[in-house]
Image (cartoon, rainbow, N blue to C red; front, side, top):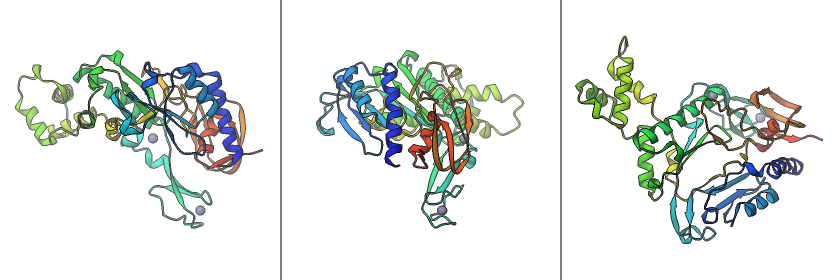
Length: 361
Ligand SMILES: [Zn+2]
Ligand SMILES: [Zn+2]
């Protein structure tokens, strides 16, 4: 990324933060949170603290960073080194990303490209470009199938929390991450003091990781029992089997396997167990895409390719080395290869942040 591209991105992000600071969602107890940010072209700055939203907004506008983060934990002294902060509990968080959900379309849109000549192909990537021997990198694309799958798994998390943990829907805030997935912040105080191991067990439960083998589950279903008192996973499996078994041609094992795979939520367990992490602050922009981490109040009406697009639609000229076809803001762009493209700022950001294009004068 050259200096003028860096300055351009900073200006585009600053324009958003200057005009739409009201979109940033700060936690109530802001003074006990750790904040951090990544400047364009720089490394992570952490262990920051703000007394109030106004102070935080002033710093965000001043820095216009690529990413802004806030801890889910509350600390006695958020600016001290981790061991001395004084951890006072943290909201439970789930991260759902299309990367972790098996979808067939990734073969089409997850590709490798050559950092030297822009040559590209399907994964897995060769170590060296077959054309110029340059280094290769992976580029994970996104599509409606992946975004729908992420949304579906986010919905499954909500269902687990409300059905099996008795969490009130009002205590679950759902956000689109700004890229390929969703973050769920759970403000149910029963979870606040859970340690890493306990959070890991919850994530594992949602992923179906703690379930017995499919044969054992199927045997249990076959044996029958007093299903009216069954709860949790077993109830989900049985309800599914009872709904689908009439006229089903396959084996019971196959049906039970379907029951599990259609209801498990592929949350990223490493995120849930990390109680000292900082997360993208709601209402701020994703560092790679320029899309906003956006609160989702209705899964049905939320469109992840349109609603989080908040940067200007003013056209900008970009010298693109290489970029595949993509959709954003209700429009399609590309594919581009060694060309000058004139595209809206909101579409240019993804290309510029990955270093696959520079602003052209
Ligand atoms: Zn090459
Ligand atoms: Zn896809």
